[in-house]
Image (tube, rainbow, N blue to C red; front, side, top):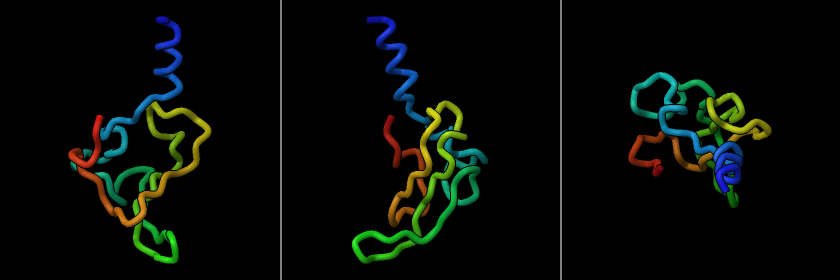
Length: 83
């Protein structure tokens, strides 16, 4: 069981807020590394949205992922993220 837990931790590592907040200002937004704000469309609606780019370049994340778009969200603060 111990090895199963180690494998699960490796495969499903959760990035901490501080992993995304590269400039340490307490917010995840377009001023952080690997983060941008860009237009995104969903169900015919377009909004500025937070894009976490090159997820594999974020410390602790498993390689093989591209990017994550949070539709209509332009910044995150620690209280927005659980964990």
